[in-house]
Length: 407
Length: 183
Image (cartoon, rainbow over all chains, first blue to last red):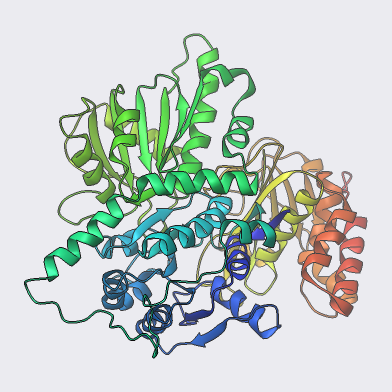
């Protein structure tokens, strides 16, 4: 049923339908309403999970690690300093191959103190060995959580679903929450095989000591599990679309200026999505909620093409839905013929450039001719507007190599 | 797309007001969105919230800089904040005040509505929580959403005596939903 909900509530309702056995979280800032709602569902007798209120994020992560090792479905959420405090456990969860799902309600990190949205928090753990997905809106946030459990439990790799703090978590918008039957069909109860979890009758060890003779191979296995998961993610997104009768493309097309529909091109590979003109001059590359604002910018500028002599902006946006595994081939296919690529990061590898920009440059090396430029936007909650995007359009034509901070 | 900006102080239900507008519009089959100007919310501090209503799915997520409607819940904000920043030729404004304000604005008189919402709220709710009074006035003034949709939206958030009182407050507000052109 389509309803209007706060983003956090939409995620909480989805988690309730997914029925984890254990939820653990630290309840103070930087926390969201997600775990508050989950606590309320439990208190009201609407849910059966064990709800463990932890004394810190380090403890919350450790509790879901332990619970997951006993072979049950688990959930936690955090962001910002909370995720940083979890970091040691975040690496352990991945190294132990535990199918934990975590929502990161992305926020900036201190100092100076910020409570506002950017992507610096998730980037601090980008090499920990988690599959990392980004949602553009509430609907995608709901769907990616279902997908996250499916993938995690299939290949024993944890999944982090990133939803922009405040911008998505605190916004009311229409969203379709799947029915319990749809969730059960896509995501049946989790029953791992005997011997894969902690069980006194079938003892095993997690995260044991690995000497130089073994450590490297174990790390390689985790690497291969993640890089080989691309096809699986694509397949499961298709399954999810079928089961929930979702049609992303149709919804997007309907919002495009009617008279211009012939010029519109939409590609959705599952891992990335392209939205924009057929042969654009500029492609913006971005993750998360700012993709919506960029789409709106493209829609507004498309009108200009109708008027003779007016300067239009010929653009498209490439949304990276899966940051890890990184969809190299899909990215190259879309950026192949374009003249300018503007990568928008809500994070920075200080002293270098945007982190998504680095990834794009790495996969595009020797494959595409376009000028790829790094733009830093929206740090610590700075609003991203049409003006920001106009400024980027102006700057990119200067073909400068320096990273640019743009408001 | 219609954009609405609400100004008030922490504790006046500024954020809830934007949410109720979005919920009411959604009940009428429209696309809508509501969010606060994110901050560390404290009672008494200046607060802003935003709502968008459209026939098409809303993708834009930036704050609202050129509103079609401005709702001012607290007239003590005039000296602190530029409440009319980004105002357009046809922007409609609703202000909660008991005073006779003279606004230095290039707006038509019929586009500005003054309403003694605090007085009404004290009479109906017994508390100076004026957001539902303002919403009633907004429904009537804007003709964007029906008063019955506001009532339905209130039902999704409140129950019991609080709900009844707020419905009454919205109704009372709607009576004031016409600008007094002659004044």
